[in-house]
Length: 189
Image 1 (tube, rainbow, N blue to C red):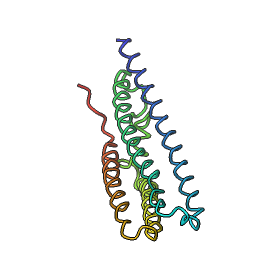
Image 2 (image 1 turned 90 degrees about the horizontal axis):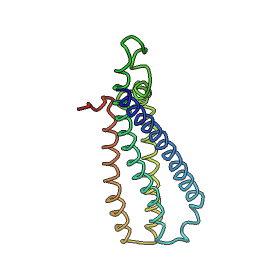
Image 3 (image 1 turned 90 degrees about the vertical axis):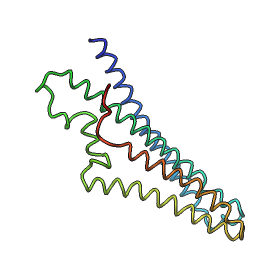
């Protein structure tokens, strides 16, 4: 019985560490994306020197958006695992010992910061944060394609279609990842 507790606790700690690392990687890649975006916009008046290759400038941001969809999905899977393990571990504590289980551990932070369960003002902030990034990325793609159109005439349709083909699965992955963030922990068999 105590061996089971040790194993569950080790998995719980591992999941918490992985989740924290995912957040750190997410913030670092977002910082790199913002730096890239600001850096290229700073030279907007000189971009014509690149000719048709201007249309390639948004591609790294599309890659970052796709990577963030993967990270968000990982965070959702980790959250579900942590919540399940937390429930199992707390079930081993005698009744009445811990405070309200909704007010401690990851359950409390998930209730506060999860799009599906947060306070309405927090939900608005989450939507502004993610929606703002999405609008900025899409605006950048459009801006660079408009700038590249002067150098490509009718051929601008090729990168336009390519970005649509890339962005649709990225958007669907984001949708899937956010849907995975339900607060109900997975049931143990």
